[in-house]
Image 1 (tube, rainbow, N blue to C red):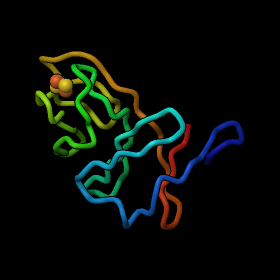
Image 2 (cartoon, rainbow, N blue to C red):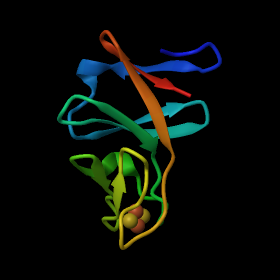
Image 3 (cartoon, rainbow, N blue to C red):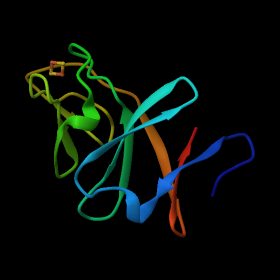
Length: 106
Ligand code: FES
């Protein structure tokens, strides 16, 4: 349920998002990495690694994590937290699947 104070923007068709691969999506001033997991759920996070700005949409997905393509930091797609022994976090975004389409909600 989306209330009236939030913005909902379509970020593509569900069947066009590649499974287990990231897709870069630009919305206003935001650059997001969007992932469709093997269980069909969608995750969206800020597209820049907090270490040295690696493009997370180009990372390797494993379960609920993405590994940064630059130096392999492991980042949760659930809450954006960088896993030990590294530290930091990226912003996560709420997504919504409605029919054939995926929406970003913010
Ligand atoms: S830039 Fe992502 S791990 Fe270094």
